[in-house]
Image 1 (cartoon, rainbow, N blue to C red):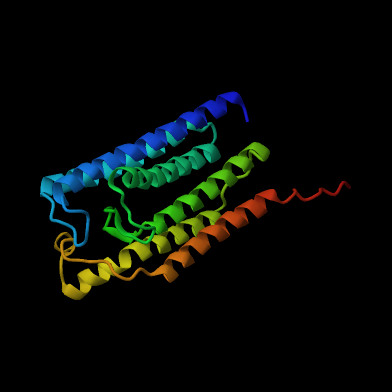
Image 2 (cartoon, rainbow, N blue to C red):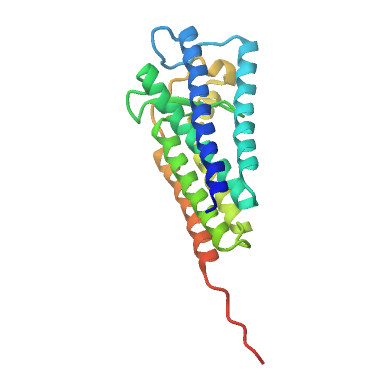
Length: 233
């Protein structure tokens, strides 16, 4: 690995940690305003204008993390890997800073509102941390293959498994809330102020994680296989 690439990766890590702090700072301000006695479910109703700003802020955060990955990488594999790395570091340090400044979460099994786009995502803190570690595992494989086999790219099968696994994981974060909306015939905005997550579908979550790990393993094995010997006639 060249010193120039190490330099870029170093700044990628610093940027991602800083983004984690920035995310935590916004949440600290919001909790001070809406949860002065401590964060708990159901969520407190938020002004519609601020709710729209929060949705746009989440979208902007993903764009920024993708942007730094694109700017840091020099190949397709590197760009995707560095986006995954940046996202994972950001997410992990977001919880680190919340623990430092708010002493929250109380445990890895504490419930959190993870995302709002396109519907609210709910899950224990441990779940996104596991996904972050999985993302970094894929990033390591992508970068390793990039240095040893520049033609190694994710295949259609790899992408299909990655997308499928991701959708299953997201389903584990959204299915309870969507079921609640359906059962109570409540729109999502109103449901968020009455829904209290209780039981997490770990089985569905680990099925999704398993699919992601299979995709990573198959990509590693396929791109690690030696090329077939050509027969000279």
